[in-house]
Image (cartoon, rainbow, N blue to C red; front, side):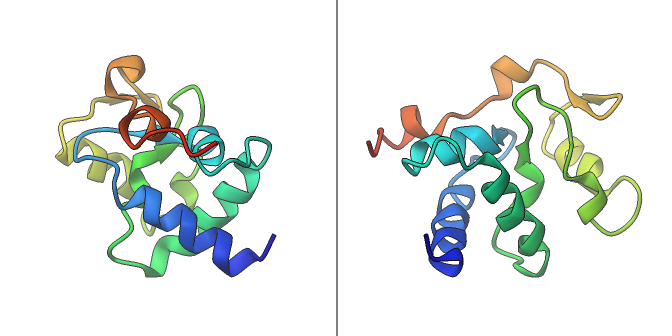
Length: 112
């Protein structure tokens, strides 16, 4: 799997995550047909900090935890960006995660 091509496919999905919603690394991987590559999606998100058009703050782990927060400048930027969109965060975790969760396979149609 070519890293740059995979990363661009990840970014294309993340650009579609609606305002005020979150998705997970694993959900993106499943949508792309690479279900076992959630960590690779994480690596792509680590490299997204320079891409203003990729809302990386909307990607969390499978439990709604802000595991990528240390890749954002400042100590609370990921949390602040989500809260600005109306997403409540308590102890680095999305409140009402199931309600806020956006599944690309459902919203965009399964690519498998």
